Image (cartoon, rainbow, N blue to C red):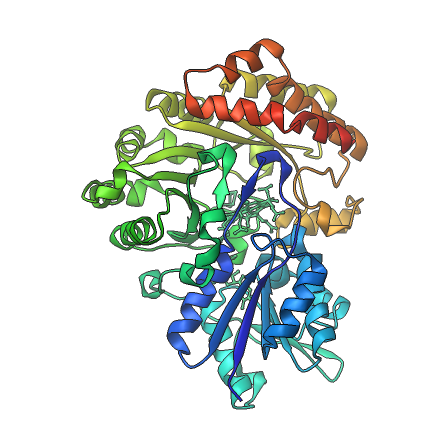
Length: 475
Ligand code: B12
Ligand code: SF4
């Protein structure tokens, strides 16, 4: 019988902090593109429950009518239950459907997840492409599962962890993401606050991983503590392809770490040759030390469409930055804000509250620091013990975790107390951060009527979507 795969982007919550958006299921598209190339005889379908507005009953009907041999799905920690529920539904429809899951959360919790969710057959740990192809081929020929690197599964009530698979050395060898499989939904993908309702939003990957080791972050650990990049030419080709073929305008680079120092110049040289540079809006994530030490490259990349940069400022206290193993300094954050302002790039700063030593006073200092830095957009998050982080191990060992409901691991919910503050007080402080930054009537009015279009959109969003009120309700 022909193998048919159904990739499922399950129904899940939206992140209210960033307002109204609909994201393409980027991970699934990247995996599907690879499988399509390696196993052309296999049928591949993707159902995106967000774009198709399918609830759980709708998904069940979809799986019934598609009747796939394998269901594959993915989600990070906050969506872990949605992934498990998808597998449960697949098994209810037909217990012969094989269920495969992957991604950061499941890579770090194979024992726990296989024990808790009998409906998951296989977990693909770490980098997915080669492992999933190997697994599908082995299932097709009913071969030996024990020889497949990078998977975890159940065998006679035991949980087996096969050895890990080495990483792909040349990321240029990966195909483009399979956006053609969600072509009917392309017109729906958007990010209102960041690019307006009518600009097509797409995600692409330029690099994987990070060579830093921040204690609250899963990414370096997930990708083996290494940073690998595609070549600048390949990244520019992918940008051009998404723009010219599908009309992608707002392009979010999934890279955790931009590394201007290594590829800033080449990216500029490549993109300046491409006509699409006039039309695209690129979003990158960076470290403050990377921006601070490469001001000239930031200016150059602005000329080829880089219009929004998110940086992890995290904290005002050098001590806390050390505790987080961040490796940046507060002076880097001041330099970054100035460079972004000077080059007319929208500055988006991330802050973390809830470190063990945090008190009302230290969080107040962080608030004042963030006001002082004055980024265009500030997001405050609560320190979250995500499985796979150094912080998680420490917090678990010390009994700091008060909320074990993964749905709340979205960084908007407080999960742990500090030495002084209760969990509820951390939640209150988080709301106060937003209130300080976005709660001033005069600042809001000037934001709403700002000459800068991005700023106008942002302030309309923060007031119109009642973000402050939503944070207050979490207390
Ligand atoms: C784009 C993006 C978004 C988009 C939406 C993404 C989407 N398509 O739905 C937006 C902006 C909306 C978003 C929102 C949020 N995000 Co986000 N996001 C990303 C980002 C930058 C890229 C995702 C991506 O496309 N990655 C590329 C793919 C290829 O990598 P991958 O998913 O790991 O997949 C590989 C393997 O893991 C494996 N694999 C993964 N799944 C599967 C499944 C199968 C079946 C198999 C075989 C293999 C496999 O194979 C893949 C290829 O090798 C990532 C960072 C990152 N680099 O991943 C953060 C990231 C996933 N987000 C994160 C978070 C926390 C959030 C939010 C909670 C907000 C926040 N506080 O930042 C919300 C939650 C929204 C929600 N409720 O779903 C965290 C998750 C941390 C964690 N461990 O849970 C990340 C890792 C950022 C970070 N640095 O910490 N996000
Ligand atoms: S937070 Fe950023 S710099 Fe730190 S390890 Fe994660 S990706 Fe790297």
